[in-house]
Amino acid sequence: MKPFVFIISSILLTACSTSEIKESINDAGDATGQTAGEFFEGATKGIQKAFDVKVSIDPQLKTKGIEVGKTQVASDSAGTDNLLTVYVIFNQNFKGKLTAKAFDDKKLEMGRSSVEVQGKKDEAKYVDFHFDRRVNLDSKNELVIQ
Image (cartoon, rainbow, N blue to C red; front, side, top):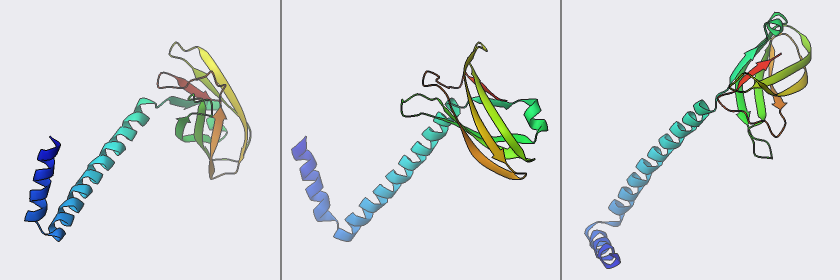
């Protein structure tokens, strides 16, 4: 098989000019790069959708002007998905403790994490809730911010 590839390569090299070969290689590389980029972008979106967790906020926090935006689950150094990052929006001044509770698919509590936060009206920031290393957050879980 190797001699066959060598012969074909030799014929192609002698039949084309150097600039034509470079152009063909560049075109092929560009097409491959675009395809790979689209694949990885699609795969990333699929992974994010697969691991989306349901995050809700306690109605009492809403009356205190707290709103939740984007959420994300990540792994800590132990390698489990036990770090919840929440974009918290302050519609009023707030100073106090936020607690995230994690529930499994049977609605049993499986972990909680609390953080002291402070924000002024019209501010927003990311807040990290670091759960015990034995908590593994996934798409079957529900999280409540209180």
